Image (cartoon, rainbow, N blue to C red; front, side):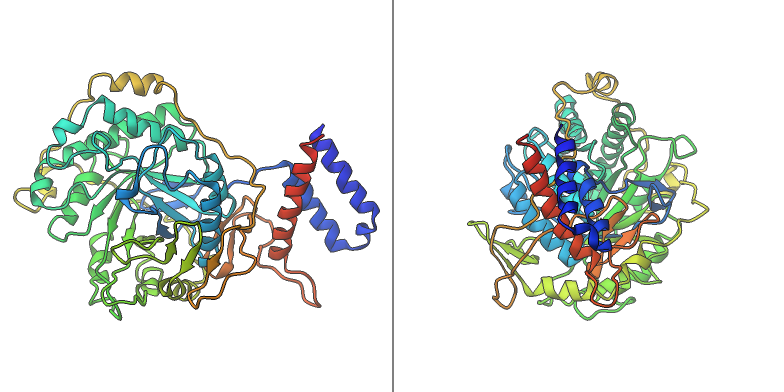
Length: 494
């Protein structure tokens, strides 16, 4: 009944001589879809050492930001960065404008509803990379005593995060840990537990999710232990990629490029060489050194340039919100307003030097590197664990894997009907931004720098324009989404 009413309204609009304009006929057809459909990004899969668009088979390069307003200390159960739809709408609009296609969220409460925020980021072509842990006691592996923190209650919590986000197509991957191994002493005790929780998560995903969502690890870029950590986590005990305890993805928090550095000074050449034979995708889960300040982000052209992209899959700038550590791109105020910082403008300029369409059109490798066998010879540092016997599944965990957790908080994509940001946002020069809004993208596109979008089907590019004064299709789509919201609201009353 509601869909029929919507089409009746569209027919009435045609009768008001809209049919005289061919371009508007196309727009009205799009409106009919928007009034009754929910768009979704294409899911990301793994092929060897590449992140891959599941539909096109092209490589996917992460152009992202870390997103944890108030930092770890600001996390409290009952709230998280993906809980408030108005906040997410504001931040998604600013990130879409910046050119971001992925966010990393560190602390999630799986027991609250994330449908609105996940759907908003999905609508603008932004993927989510999610940590399954939190800073609260019992909700992460304690690096000082991992054997005490690895138990059924903790594992149940990680499974709840999977359940909460498994049905969102823009859920790109989960991190089983973040810098839990950060020096030689932790390298001695923690690695088997990282493989254990990775195993449990991958087995849970395989049994309880409709698609294979990757599970990775975010490492500290500590040169003394980095390669041992990578080898320990990527190797196989089964002789092939079927070992569920090996990570699907390896990421590192890298701050080696500071100021006006160079490829060699920042040792990007070393990183590319070290990871050239990786059997899993590798990318920067954090980057953006802030000494000297202000940042110039000259690593961006290098990270997405021809010397790095054959090996690494992009990265996430640390971080979106300004905290005491002074890494922010945007200051978020307590009254809901926001102020762009100079780093936002500088990063946007660097992102805009990239050719987003070209960046996301690279062909995935036809060959893959086989994972190394897990042997003591892989480990080069005395004191780093070289025993690949990992802890058994804790009592009660196998039942959760086989039958799913109780009261699973499963989310779903919902229509995004509000597109205009209501909070005040100031540019870095103090001017108030006018007309800030998200631009929902068709399902075959992800967001990219310079306002461009990646087209992954035969549909016309959203950046295509007609000459002779014709309307920009991207702007028209934004208008149509707004009208579609009115149609949805009008028909809901019928």
